[in-house]
Image 1: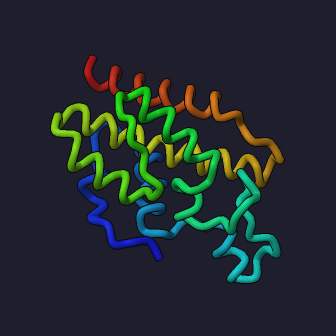
Image 2: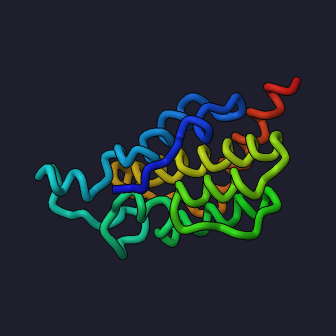
Image 3: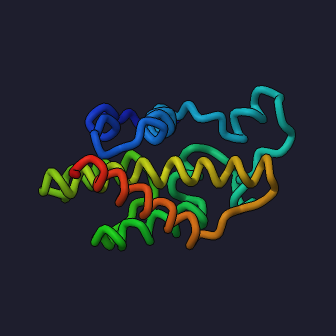
Length: 156
């Protein structure tokens, strides 16, 4: 089970799209229907990560132990000017809260993390249902585009 997180201060943010909020909230609560949970329920036989195939797919693995998600997260954080990625979603959000003092930049970072979580979950679903995994570069571009245009639409 994921560590207890005071998620509301990270999730509820004007810069974050509603569909990203829902996915982030479910991930922070460890309530996404990951393959390990579906395997436990007897719904599927294979509990391996659909993105890397190297480990059991759990929320902890997907956000951000999986090579695919770790690389996406690292590239997006570099784009935002952060060079210190964390290996767990709640740890990353707490780190951003502590070290990102500028409130505007912090809200942008939270929106970016929510977009990362949403796009990784989307890539995972594409891998399962359509047997295709978007490239890391395409996923990162989609995250950058979404965050940039969401903020511009709010500020204009």
